[in-house]
Length: 153
View 1 (cartoon, rainbow, N blue to C red):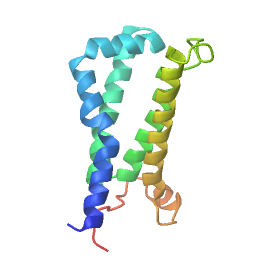
View 2: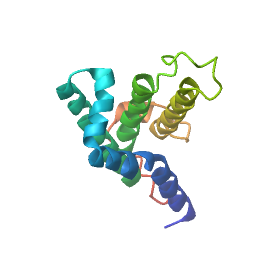
View 3: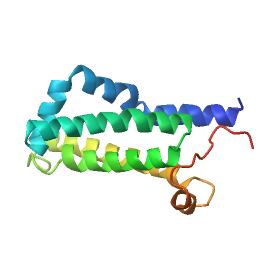
């Protein structure tokens, strides 16, 4: 394995570490708590359960895709959308109403989490479009193809 391949592997593992193992394990070990959190946004328990299970599937399957390089662009795209969706649904910094009035308020904490989700999503979009200048076209032409991040050039 070359230094470039090892760096790519390390970077991809770092990008998904939040999801696999940590968030996925948190959902599994604290499933009822995760469902209760989701109920605050989605209402009925059956819908909240489906949302948590879908999130768990995304976190596991797409993380494995990103790390292994199998359909990694599609997996990265799904995780990018997931990051934006979770930011908008669960990091609603505008709802506590204390953003401007309390420097250490709940709104400010949620704001930073919101931005972190967006930044992570942007990082996954970089995997989708690549850094070789080819842009979005390779993804659009073959969305489930592997970018083959560990092949020697």
